[in-house]
Image (cartoon, rainbow, N blue to C red):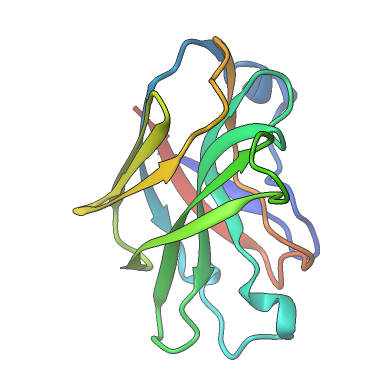
Length: 171
């Protein structure tokens, strides 16, 4: 498992540029990972009104701009359940009129435990599974063959409130 660290006050996980370049692929239709949130990923109460913005765990960008066509797992602390993280499916789809992105709650997971997830691109939908929970999200933008791995990102508007540690194994 690779540990990704997002430093306090940052959005991006610190990582070598070669790792980002190594995430470029061709024709990914199934994407599987295992992940673990460190205790640093949970805090409560919310710091401000934007603290419920979704943070990005991982996913796939298609083409050359992930803000036009991508699917990923997103997360935010469950401020009502200590040590619990809410997981969402999150898509950018430039063909959807008037929507920048969409999100759909999947499940909640405890910090400190190993979890598995899969994203499957199947025609006009994404099937996203986290542990035993599954959702389907619309994919109205055909996925080009060129694709790239999306790495942990903190935000929304806020930056990381502390050093955040997340472990991910790409399968």
